[in-house]
Image 1 (cartoon, rainbow, N blue to C red):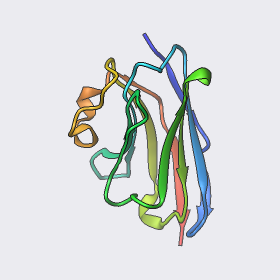
Image 2 (cartoon, rainbow, N blue to C red):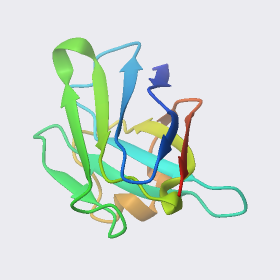
Image 3 (cartoon, one colour):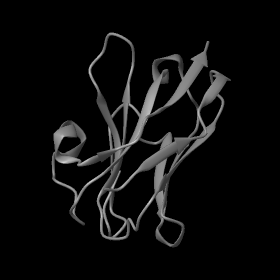
Image 4 (cartoon, helix red, strand yellow):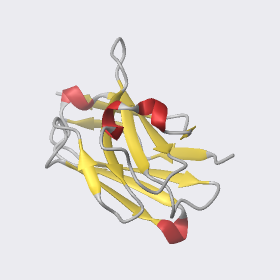
Length: 126
């Protein structure tokens, strides 16, 4: 059973940047990986996905500001977040699929991911 551990969250002012990391206990090279987020009182939202071929997909609200990437040699997933806004405040979760390809609707299909981290909090003040 893969274990995922996120880090890199924190508090920043609007316009600032953060880089989240997610380290897996086993190889991720053959897994679709994703970042999700959940704000208090809101449903979990897909942020970005990256498949084993490094094809990426982003939610509309983060497109152009966030970049997902992976380092398979380090079993690590990243999320570079630039120009952060108050609306980005949430708990951010790393997720891994059992399959190399991401579903076309992966951003809205959290249930398609088998493994989840505990989350890292991102707070953006305006």
